[in-house]
Length: 335
Image (cartoon, rainbow, N blue to C red; front, side, top):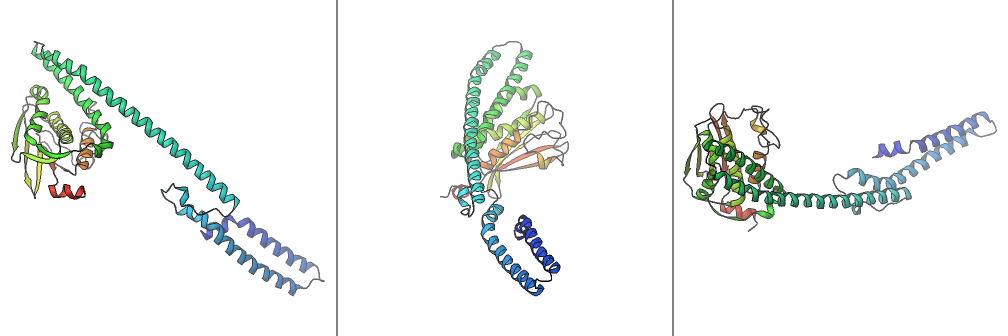
């Protein structure tokens, strides 16, 4: 800060040095002026000017040093009181800019919240004709057309569901209800939703639920399992089997989903939970949104569920959900 102060006052210091040199030059040119007296004057002037700079630095640097040390603090009240008219101008303009930025931020938040509410309402409205469409498809007698239409209906259903939960993720903490969840009912309900897709690919399920229930939020766990199962069906080879298993590992209940697909490349594993990442294997797959695992991981983190993945080339992929214990939930909730 001292260096910055001296650079800022370089013109003052330059003027002072120039005036001292001018006095010495006059004393040199005019024999009637005592050189010793001039040197004494210059010496006193330097001392007084140095003291003047020291006190001005103490007074002027306090305000700007506070500015320099600020990081993400946008509260103008934390600044010291301005000690000069120029500092007052800076403080007033800073406060005015912060006030306008806050107003704009509030307006943007309200606008985004309004857009989110409209989109959520629209998704719910779309679900009504989508349900009617499913009933109409069920009445079609031509099996091949029925399978194709059911598959396309399922894709729309899953995309709308993903979009709905994407909008709810930021406020997930306000939407959690922790309770004992029946894993069998939840898992089979999600499998039933995907049955038309599974029938089309000839995929079966081996469900081994050695632990029947878990302490968590049913709605968000359903969403996470839906993403894992849909990914498993999507990447499994035709006429293969997906294994869904629950049990206890290291004192924690776990639920795993294993497919028989091509697996995930080792270089892709660190990035699979990134928003928009669609893997280098299916980089040109236009159907992939790169949002499923990203949203599932966000939801799992909010539920304090550890999500792990193990994948082997051409041997499939296993996603494992490791749930917190009841005591850990009590600690999280501060009970």
